[in-house]
Length: 413
Image (cartoon, rainbow, N blue to C red):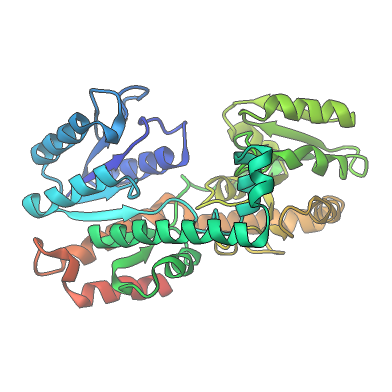
């Protein structure tokens, strides 16, 4: 079995969620006896994969450079894959190339949507505030203006998503919440073309439970538009005086770092450390609580990663996928969106109740087990086998209803 991944960033699992997900799946498929090929449209910045073969563009310009698309076509014809997993279905030149070569080579084309479709719908005012000059934001910050922006966004993404559904044989979403988001944009769609497979983590680490310290941890990019790190200092200001033995460690870097340092100094906050960009593993091993302030995410790998080390997540309930990843009041706590007082009160309650915190640690590890690569990888292999049960490999858009019904059924279980 030959599996071919396509993506636009450089192949480096340390540089982003798509890259990390691709790396883990490629490693798993290789261990199961598959021949794995990666094709990155980036020219530079790669690391050599330990599993599989890496090809990449030889010129700048990624998917917008026709020579890079031609090189991809050459590699496809050389490798003759059975399954192509397109990690960047929004990229039109890439998608069109894969569709054009599909019938000629005879592979199954799978598109993976890695982001929330409601990132704008649920966070429009915040995104506009941080994206536009002040005068432009004031000009549009009223109900008719915001509705007009929402309508433009809906029309644009409706067109994109219909093309993606049409061009891929199967469309893979990360959570069941994404199905409702998809329906919002395109209306009714062929359910048999859409399936659900989450991102994965390597495994769980219960041996770290006896290493826990009184540490609250944030891991992620220091940027505002998505991660809402402008709320970090405000949150800690409401917590630190009531948890005098606890420390707040922030692992990550980004454009908001200098402003965050200023926020901390202005508020004269104690026991808060900016660790910069680091391997988060040692921090997960020692931390007891994980905080996340994002306004939107597709599937935040960092949540099951934190849980796999027995770190209890606290997050704003600001996007629908969260409820499909963690369980409120059992292995995580979800607070009102962007309400730092609500999150602070939840953390004070759990942080001062050692029995509840311990119970939630064990529950977190139990929840994380369902996202381990051995379980998620099996879902991918099951999808492959269902697809190849179809009669006509050359015309996959309208094939074997039995196989597609099995796919839909498996996702309801």
